[in-house]
Amino acid sequence: MDAPSRIRVTDLSRIEQQLAEMWRDVFTKDESIVRATKFNLIVACADSETDLLSVGQSLARLCETEPGRALVVVPPPVSRRGGSVGIEAWVSTHCHRLPSGGHACSEQVTIEETPESGEALESMIRSILVQDLPVYSWWRRRIDQDAPLLARLRGLSDCLIVDGASFDDPAPQLARLHRLETDRRRNGSTVDLAWLRLEPWREAVASFFDVPSLRGRLEGLTKVEIVSGGPASRGVWSTAALYLTGWLATRLGWSAGARPTIWHLEDGGEIRVLPNGSSSIAAGTIGSLKLSCTGNGMTTVFSAERLEDDYVRLSVEAEDACPVPQRLRLPHRDDSRLLCGVVQLHSVDPVFDETLDLIAGLTLG
Image 1 (cartoon, rainbow, N blue to C red):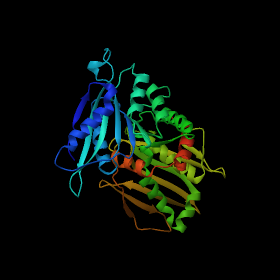
Image 2: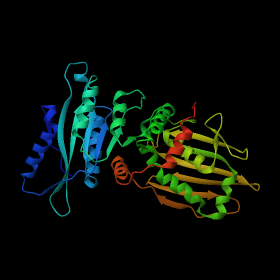
Image 3: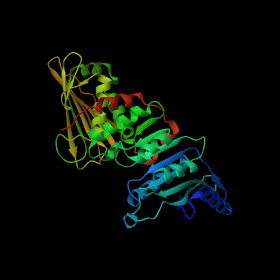
Image 4: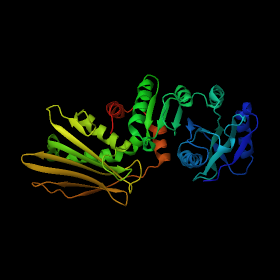
């Protein structure tokens, strides 16, 4: 993957022309260049330095398989805040070598906003979107219902992408996300990368009950214990733990109790959900899940535990059965791979909608 070239745009009304000139310069090289665009991706970075670097790396990897036009919006650096300097922009390319020779390249426009940019910023973004292609917006900031830029991006995009793993206060952030998502169901969709990261865990837990003789023990489920990345203390609810609990609740027909640690079954049974945090586990990830079931005077414990080598070990402890523990690989999917899946296969996920509907009303504490 070649390092991106970056050119400052001196006349903001000529961004499209600047891109065309940049491509003319690229095409004068001896090697063949393939310029391809399948989608628009607007990214709202949290800051203009560290986050911009991380986003650039993710976009470069994404464009190796899914080429598109990225419009990256960053706040001004500290040195420019409070000044009178207006919006600034740069154009650059992401190129990688093709197996057949030559390069495939995508383009990026980096826009440095100002607190007063408002409508001017929206107008600029609209003018450089590639028409008749889907528009994705990746929001990497806090979810504030009244954030002007977020409101503008919602109106521009077919799909809003967030990452709940970054929520340090998941309850209010998920409640705001729910309000955004329910509004968008009429004319767009919402994707949370934190939910997508849990897919291997959901599949692993579901595999416990592929065996009919074990499936029936779910009727006696009384306790769920979840350890996720976060502060090393009891009672810590991370976004991942909330999503996993909500998924179990929607699949098994639970209703929420007075506290998020208490859930109810249709027959009046009660289930306790005990979340724990661990500082040794990466934020946004699950370390272990344990389901305790009772029935016929016996207790059965289903355990899923992450191992150091990106495997999860599935085991069952029961007096009348001793299945051999299984090891399943947890596929490594960084932001670029998750984004790739969104732009390749994105569709409305009713299970996500149901889960978010359920957990958005919970009050933690």
